[in-house]
Image 1 (cartoon, rainbow, N blue to C red):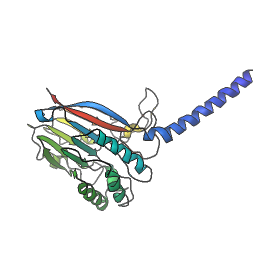
Image 2: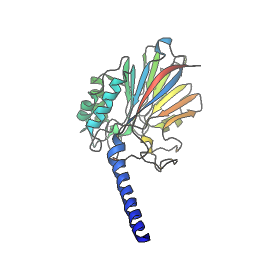
Image 3: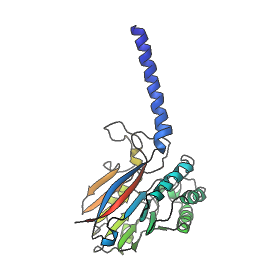
Image 4: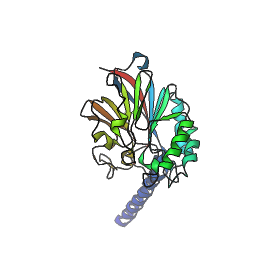
Length: 280
């Protein structure tokens, strides 16, 4: 009898390993979650209170991520009826410009937002060496052709809300000072910064408000009650979710929709749905 129980235990263990492996490969990488949160913004105009902003990032269009999955996720965004969409980098994983057309095709599934869609690029959008400006420029042209405003170290204002975008810190032209040159500290603002380590760089000066980031994928895999073993940031505090920073700034890190390798465990892909609120 003990031998039989041992065989059952080993068989059950192996079955559990196989089931977990299949789950991390076939299920969770495509089981995206809509995370609904309030986003309190100081000085928010009354007309924008209650408006919806969707944050997306890390689509990683390419060989590792199924475009059909991404398009289904973007169709879900349309059903959320966002007033704003913030696309925070790493649209593609590429060796050059070969994925630009596929990004444009995938983005066709994202309906127009009511008040505007804004984006910054991530490190992978500059190709494998993170400095291919031709690949990045081609991507920017296709995104802007699809109605997305790509912020390249610059600011735009819509309905009294400032959107500021800084280029990626691993890319060739990160310039926080230039990004904030036109920033008005008396008006509400949101900053798009792909890599959360950018929040620790010098040059933020008078900026007060939220910084929306991605890049980490939430670590993609973790054990219960443990932090992920590997997160590609210098500041190991940054994994996913909201963080309070010095200088009256707040950081939000979205877990991303795509992946480098098709594996996730207890770190589901994320679509963030923010409801704008007036902060005291």
